[in-house]
Length: 513
Image 1: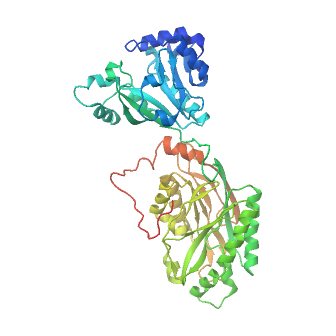
Image 2 (image 1 turned 120 degrees about the vertical axis):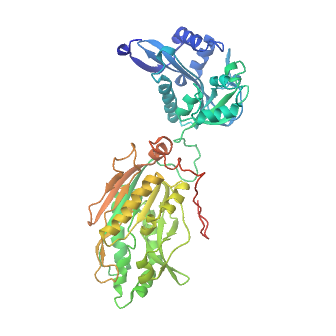
Image 3 (image 1 turned 90 degrees about the vertical axis):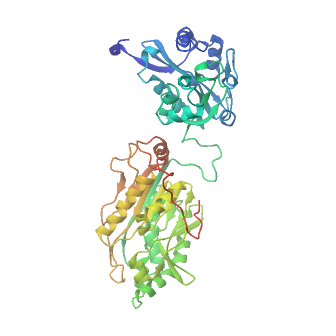
């Protein structure tokens, strides 16, 4: 074969290809029976033409992948090759199957080294995604075991191949293509003497698979985030404050945002209604408005059809003051996340207490977590949420200086990378000269992504102008997170060394999944 004349083409197998296919199968499988009958190939083409693929070079067939559709529950359990196909019959193709089963992949020996097998496997994966199937299954022979059968058991051999201390021409290839060994198959192909009849059941999971019944919330792929960078201004009353908030919610809704996130302590201007209170009294006074504001914003979430992360507000419970963020869904439900780590300023000047619970929230636009300002500087919380499947982390913050802001920003971006999720941070700007301890603010709100090929090169999807009141929009793709988890250039979540360390939630309130 002359490399400069190579012209490769991937296409579906046709019955006219059978003579070339048979010659290739006889060449590759001379030790286990050679070519399948033409009738068997014709049946595969008739039942599932999309699954029968070939690669040709200048019209000459040089590689083939043969595939059927099966029931995952049936063939993820022990079986034999003859349960799938025999010399004269295709036995297990199911038009309603929820998984692909790779019957065979073979390549002309003269073309080995061109990674044609990998190309066929990628085509199979594309087919699995297109048809929304659960997985690809395959029974992998172990032809290299014949050289080690008198030295080790088959399970020891598989472990050595997985550790890459032994090379097996089939298993090594399968592992390099993202397949995992699920179980050992005994007497899978009894005539396969080099494998001693053994095979591995291999599986590639389609991380984009969506079951027909996928729970209470319909799955969304592209989600639009709306971030409010709000200038602090005086408020004459609760109604005045709510009118200001509604302006932003209305604007975000006009652009069809799925989420609106407000800054930490966005209700602080109400402390200016009474200027004769000390700081502890002022924050308790502010807390007296929280339930009214929460209920009004819950109504906005429904009427404007948008999920609202209501920044944060002080809440009095049993004589204690907490810093609380509310999630107000557009279906009318409301939940809360208390700030866990309290800054020295909050503790000293406002006597705020830390909460004891950590929540993950399901919404119609993804699984989310909320960490208020200082909480994002503690990586343990983000990791605990990631272990519960968090896709988007919202961080309402309030910082008065640029160095304080940069702590929040850099930690938020680190959480996006290490937990393979999106992070949106929302802060306030301007000043409130009549409100003690809330004099000035510094912010540059932003939306961050993980750092990999699927995302912006600097991990920043969108960011605001510093210290300017504005709305920020960012469209994020949740499906890219699934690809990252499985196929990223690095996979932080998957590669953790759980044999060496662990993270345990010790709070009195159970970590809520």
